[in-house]
Image (tube, rainbow, N blue to C red; front, top):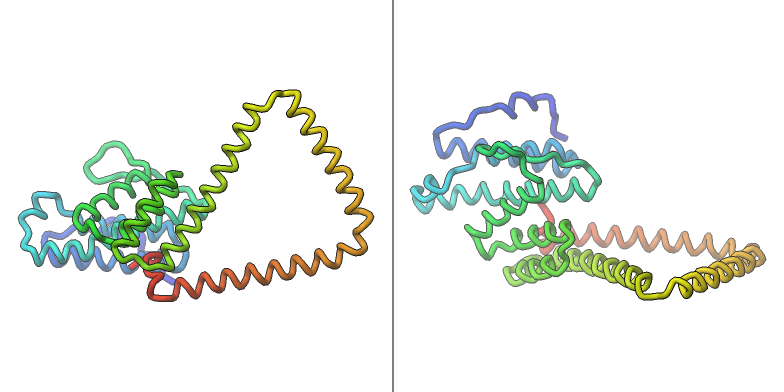
Length: 262
């Protein structure tokens, strides 16, 4: 597990003037960030990726003047750093961690983290339109924003670009769950709007009566249902464990590479 003892030193290191040295420093920050990411230390991983971006950043005119081999070398470092940054932000959000507004070099006002992620993905796709992982990260970002339709389209682009089937299937499953939840909320909303208030009250009273009858039946049947319920929960826990194990095995397969940082 990486140490955070040297945080102040590496977060203030200056950007060099030699092209190769800048890329090497950025790659080192990226690799250290990956160590933290895999250890679940996402806050410090994000700071490492930010520092990597600082070192490998070149303005459009600088990139234009580079020879093709130097452009390729720059993209080889910039692209994984940008996509790893996005993965880190999304992982932190899913874990319920706060992601602070991002202060971008040369700008006065800080950015929303998801806006910054969208910008970085756009930069990758502008340079490499058929980059499968960039489309995949874009799908994840759109899901985080709640745009399931656009997320599905981005996922299809990732698949067309050669994205791994295991990662795509897992993301498609998440999108389907979101879509079902959204449809359920809409049904509840429109049901409450359209149904007259008297009907709503009658339905509530009927539901309450059914609930009371159900509680009575449950109490009377407890000597029989208690052991069966315990057995059912044990079986459900076993199924859940097997599903998680299967998901881990899928991530270890080569076609699950879209999920990983690199």
